[in-house]
Length: 241
Ligand code: 4H3
Image 1 (cartoon, rainbow, N blue to C red):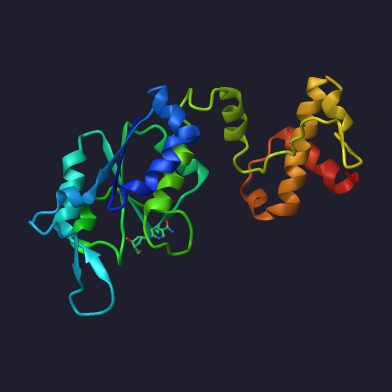
Image 2: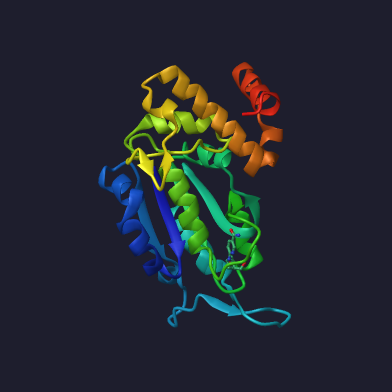
């Protein structure tokens, strides 16, 4: 996958993308991530990228011609152009899974009051990472890219954990433990050291259901229960587990 990030603040991305999973994806050539400075596409000699609002009011707006030039420079037939915006559709794991199949993402990060409306028809999609306003689209872009790149086969190094994740995106994860076996007078649940793989699998599934019921009951309403999950939920509710 290729990802072009268009931003007025390219240095914001350097630390994040030089550490972490994203670095691994780049090193293994699984993702080619390029950061472009929108200012390089400014048309006039003052390198102007923003201007005052028609109609008055505080703040500045990014100029339509500059934004369009930056996008068009990177755009091909395979591109999917995303504008990070609080007005966009909320990002969730199933949308991330779809984006992971795209050949080329162009992610536009706005600043100031946003972008001249006449640049908007060039976006394929507006995406929001949640109902709050940030000073720029850079952090939302990092969220989207991190979530997407980790789904590219080979990036995480163990495909198994992704498989488990994909069938359980509507449930929360089961609790995890590592050594020592007793910590602060609390023992690791015995089933996990039993070596009985089927019992471990069932215990984990039941814990996922229990956690989701207690912490995110809203997710359970949307969940498609298979037969085993129905049985486990019955045990949780009526057999005191
Ligand atoms: C996205 C972008 C929040 C989100 C953003 C989000 C600044 C977009 C400016 C930038 C516009 C004002 N804030 N929730 N901020 O995903 O360019 O909207």
